[in-house]
Length: 290
Length: 201
Image (cartoon, rainbow over all chains, first blue to last red; front, side, top):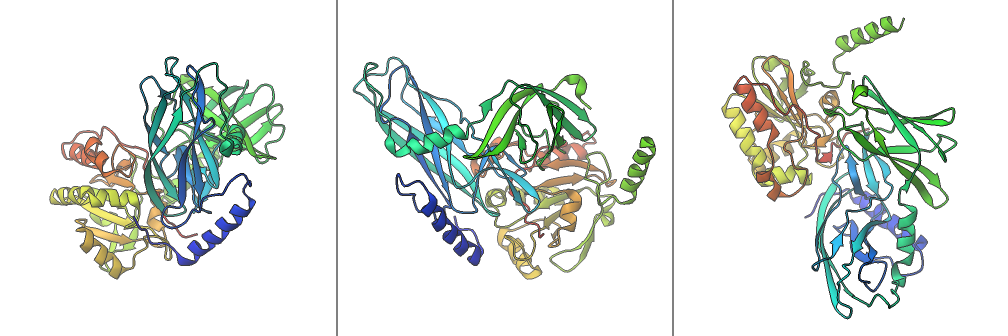
């Protein structure tokens, strides 16, 4: 599919993609991302082997052309989350994508949540205990995504990996090509928090008060996202400290209809290694409904 | 004091309806904008008729999904045959993807076989902002009294796959049918899905 695009923007995109390549880790060649795809998509495995009875990490490795992005589980005002449909040998099971911390994109006053540059969408693969050592498992997935700058292009690809099953007594063999990618994926994973969340819905505002150990000391630079759709508006929330507590105040979504019993809040903070963040399930008491 | 402020805010909202976000069950914002034929179109001119607003960007894959499968055109044809006014709106700013001038808009309607009543050229985004239109497509159904009865997606499956259309609930068709039968609209809002509307700054 070809989509009309702005000539100068495209050339600039290529130039920026070039400079990003220079800064990439030297472990391997960063694939060229250009032409009509705007994102390259690969299925990767942390290990070159499969161990019966283990849960192992797979990843969908995304290389976005500069200025292009794909989406989080909640894409925001527009867009679509990336989806995976697996075809696996009997007994193998792939978990849902463990969505990494999203970034907020301002697209002309509308907001989207997702990923740019290099990103890995991690997937836990359970290898059945009765997988036969010496056999090869054929892992296949139909990936569908939407990649956007301002304009959007849908993409799909069937990705496969053939990995040997080893005996439980053998040592699993890490795949050195992806060490860095999986290390980055772990940093981009929302951490579980021991915080407590309380929600107050007041007219067209939804305010979350977080309390507990290890809360960020300052509100500056923080951002917050809700996984569920039709709940909060996609504009950046107002975040402030209230004593020890952290208060995140969203505008209510215009498409809010039924209050959820609980929702998943992700808080992000700029860190030395890009960004770090936390995930917390917050109850939405029925009595708090407007 | 707070109460007075609330009253003042309420008074302002009524006085300047364009600033308020559209709310289902409330009067839909009026507008005045030129269509592809050079004619001025306003919502108030259609009092007594049911009106559908459809946000459009010819190059958006979600729009192409519904036009490529003739889903949009057949809904337009069915609605206008029943006396509904169907206004397709393009809020793409000049220089942005999907922006159309009058000549290219006429060519586009011809090419896709559009059956809308009029194609509105809203390059300054006034109508789009008044309705808080976010995506293409983004749909609104307004009843004969000018009250907003539906806003949201064209259907229930957010995807760019043509194959999903027959499996999805077509919310606009459903709302129009219920309104014509004098019934309340069962699904009066859904989260719209699609490309972002390409507003200017």
